[in-house]
Amino acid sequence: MFNSLTERFDSIFRKLKGHGKLNEQNIKESMREVRRALLEADVNFKIVKTFINEVSAKAVGTEVMKSLTPGHQVVKIVHNQLIDLMGSKNFKIKLHDNKINKIMMVGLQGSGKTTSCAKLASNFRKQQSINPKLVACDVYRPAAIQQLRVLGKQLSIPVYADEKQKNVIKIAKKAIKESENSDSNLLIFDTAGRLHIDERMMKELKDLKKLLKPDYIFFVADAMTGQDAVNIAKEFNDQIEFDGVILTKMDSDARGGAALSIKAVTDKPVVFVGTGEKISDLEEFHPDRMANRILGMGDMLSFIEKAEANIDMEEAQKLAKKLQKNQFTFTDFLSQLQQIQKMGPMDQLLGMIPGMNGKAMKGMKVDEKEIKHIEAIIFSMTPMEREKPLSINGSRRHRIAKGSGTSIQHVNRLLKQFEQMKKMMKQFSNPKFMNKGMLPF
Image 1 (cartoon, rainbow, N blue to C red):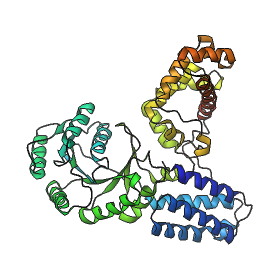
Image 2: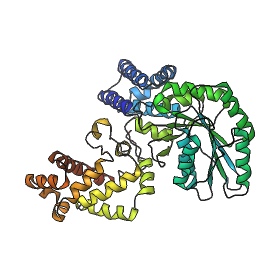
Image 3: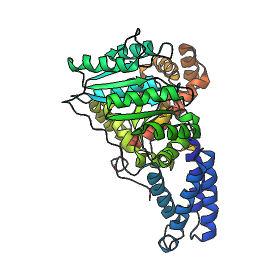
Image 4: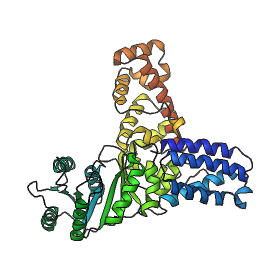
């Protein structure tokens, strides 16, 4: 997520911070590079022009020029401008337990709309008083109804569907009537997608909106389509007027242009981002946190929230004590990797840590399939080797590789990753590092 842009910004601002004093020429050159970086990230060119003009105007001010740390002041200006660009406030969804809440999901075919319905339902179910139900209103795409049924079964969330009925208005009416006699108080409507803007289907959405009077309409867009997603979002908003955007496949998009452009173009905020294929891979979109990630400042708040939701805090406290005494072992390493796996892909988690830019993360990515190799290697170690990794010399590495069915290269890589993770975990245990308000300005 934003990997390319983060690396470019890191290079630009490192050079800028190297100047003891800044002048208009320094700033102009830096802004030219920022402009190029944003355009390469597939940000709308009109938005880039406005962004650069506003940052430049603030950067050449007396306060920055005379500052003892002018480079840091420019970074701060860019940080604030990025927050304004993506939306200065978080979008708050208010659901009520004393009525049937309704959410409509709209968007192009293939954008991940049906999966997003399930992810959203799972997300809202965490609220004690909310009992979601999925409603299948996509009667055109083959297997769309079956896909929703399968997702609902996986999550134990009810699905209303009628394969014999092709009129979505009638389907919606029956779904609402059925829900009046159940404990479901949130209906999420999966509507028909389209390969392009289609007048007939758009009319169907308008009619459905008129019937439902939904509490929220979310436009689902594939982040990898970049400015195409932004342009389609504008057309949908002009005709349907949605409330917010869900960007899917953000884990696969290193550029992030859609996330940076969509608010400025549609005046509607990004509400959630899909960060993987798992049902749990849906994050609330926080403009300030995202600005931190883009500028390589990490996102400790999101990291902490993920940790609190997935990690046994009692075990974490025991581990912190062991780290302070430098007693971190391979048994602990394996346990932590398995818990971290629950939080999401390793590269995404590392990207939330301040200072962990693309260069710093090289060699630290752990593929989920690689966990099996790691388990085999650790299980091939003797109890003494797991407790004292420094004892693993050349002959021991050869034996471990043979016993685990891997190679000496695999074993060497794991030993290196172990030392890196040991340092990283020790850093986490530092109370100063865990200060939620920390920013490197």
